[in-house]
Length: 298
Image (cartoon, rainbow, N blue to C red; front, side, top):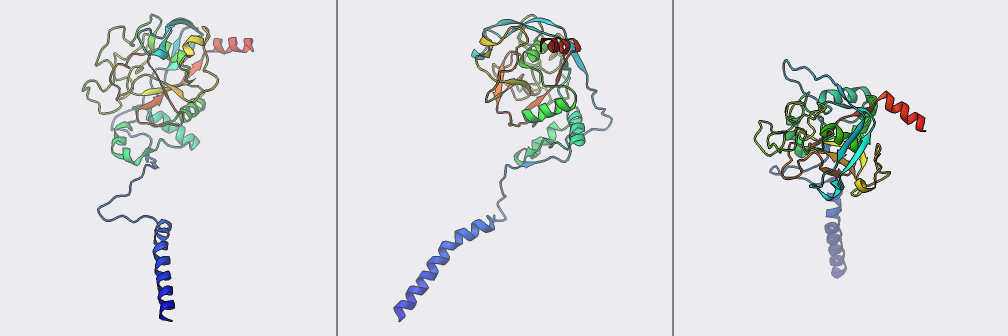
């Protein structure tokens, strides 16, 4: 009899011990007063943009890039920047500045589109990139495309972006062929900016057409899917995006950029749903004559 009771007690103890981990999972993990729960879940910022007394939002403006040829790529660059070719583009317009926090906030308010929520690990650094005239960051390719569409524009093609920043003479930087370590908002010199700068701050970072911040500040989403060898096979006239791909193209450098990939021809790639505090965008628009030409070709 005693042996049977002992077996029952022993069985109860085993079942209780086995149930404890399950109960803990169902209740959730409890941390001690000396521990903090860690999470990377996006924590949306209260406002997309913050203003300082007396600051006015920069007015959005576009620059017209005339139709004609330009030199795309660089033989001195990476494998995906070759071969160098002369590409012909129809006229188009592109934003002079990267889209700002203030401008993006108007879009969020009007459409209830998601805010560029920074993960909790960026909570402290997030305050450094939220000035009303700093470029919007932490937006995916889809976010950028949705904003451009809402504003009656579109993302620039990769070829359009390069011509707008480079001009027609094959230069490697917006200001010319000689590298300037302090020419843009990079991480190479102490330029007084811990993160992004107010758009248009770096006057050397101005293309021959007057388009600002192509070399630095933030990397920018463009329309195209990334194709490593696309420069070899793309058409010479108005090359479109490859039909499909895994990554979308990013162009330009950011405030964290160092090393050799500072030239305006450098190409980057990223999953389209990726968001980061170094990535923003600007929009483009086909000119009326270009749209009419496309309609005739349909």
